[in-house]
Amino acid sequence: MIGIRAATMDDADAVTACVHAAYRHYVPRLGCRPGPMDDDYRAAIAAHDVFVAVADDVVAGVLVLVAEPHACLLDNVAVDPSMQGRGIGRRLLAWAEQWARERGYAAIRLYTHERMTENQALYARLGYATYRHRTENGLARVYMCKRLDSSGP
Image 1: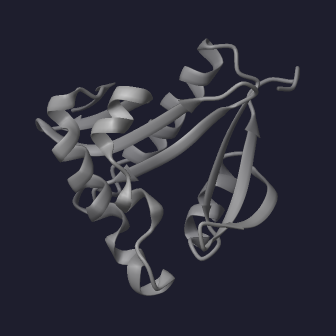
Image 2: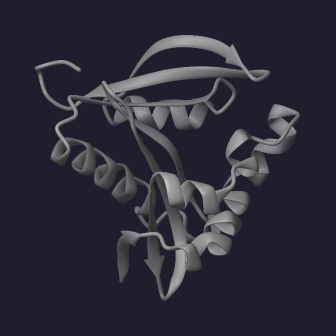
């Protein structure tokens, strides 16, 4: 059974470990650590809406949402590689969209590294459209957005 709940400070180390495990394989491809590997998850839990997917009492996935004025930012979604293939990532993405809708957002946006092409393909299949390419903090990013209703942000 996989459940999703709000993360607590007690989860911070497990959240960090999950994110590191999920992103570690990108380091050789990018030539650097992906940004989420350097985030402070204690600070994220304190400042944002962070959720964990729990399977067998273990943090299997992480979702970080940031409330912004015109759209919800899906700041990070990560699934521990040992738990991949169980639909956890899709469940977390669906959770994010429902969370955003419940708070009145018309759109949810995200960004990913341009070399994380499999992520871009997944997001596109789920209805996200690319709207910008930009280099920030030395990282080549692809920005994507999904409309949650027809009223606009």
